[in-house]
Length: 331
Image (cartoon, rainbow, N blue to C red; front, side, top):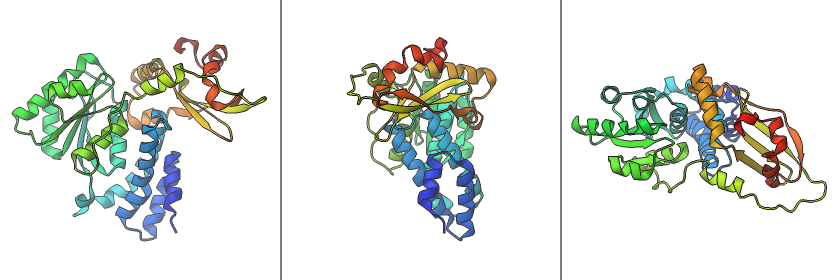
């Protein structure tokens, strides 16, 4: 008998092969497709989304979990494309990065998490003009359009897309925006229906706009709160001889995040935006910006010990010994 709790845990840990096998096993047992989707995949991804909101998981780990969800979705999608299946959908979401902008890692994450929340998602990719957004909307009939931009030089084009939809008589489609330079103030200025501060907040916004969730809580940019916590390191009472374990998550050879733990607690560190910027630049130069290509480059380094408790490690981790595991050019 299928164990949905175990399936949720495998998804949370990013075990794609196991999630795919358990999805097939559930169907072989005669479980309803919608039950497998909601209890096996959406429930697991919901936990991932909540932990992402509360800085328990960070972007690389969410991407790994989302890849596991996609493995299960690949099994279910042909069975979901049947009459009446739309009745249980959260809504239809059209996503794209605006013209002049080639960044899509954040957009891909939103797409994966929206699928995990029950949305039918169409991703039209990067560098999309208002004409391409309109053509895709005519074909796909979305309830919501999500636009992404990472550059201040391209975010202004979001206004062009919104104006284009209004002129074409598509004012009933909800228009949402997101990306590193985007704020709620900018969303208000250009007439967008909402702004997602990160992927989890964006999905909350989509559910709210579809009448299927509460208004999303106001949130600062991902990493802003974490950076404050890390910089303002407080003295920690350390038991004599206390030690903790550490592990670094790498994108290829570049550090993406760090975790430290012992028997009592676990702490995770989201590194400075310089690290993310460097990873993004390398991913762009190598053509590894698509979701699966990007996620395939992630790997955990070997565990190692450090003196002191997990919550007291980051101050010393950013000093001289940090250079032994993190390139000095990124410190």
